[in-house]
Length: 66
Image 1 (tube, rainbow, N blue to C red):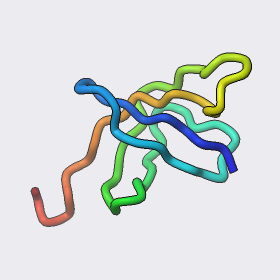
Image 2: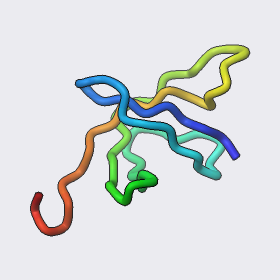
Image 3: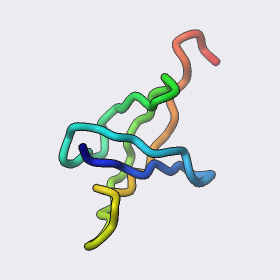
């Protein structure tokens, strides 16, 4: 299963295993801790990288507004 490195404006967010071979801007993904993130950009990780891509994300607010 492909692994993606997630980062936001502040830096590293985490790693995500996802069955999709590529995730593009506009995709919403669920993080292992239950939070959701909107993918704003997908950056190819380059040849030999252990990641399918580096994803720029914006963390979405929790349903309770926090």
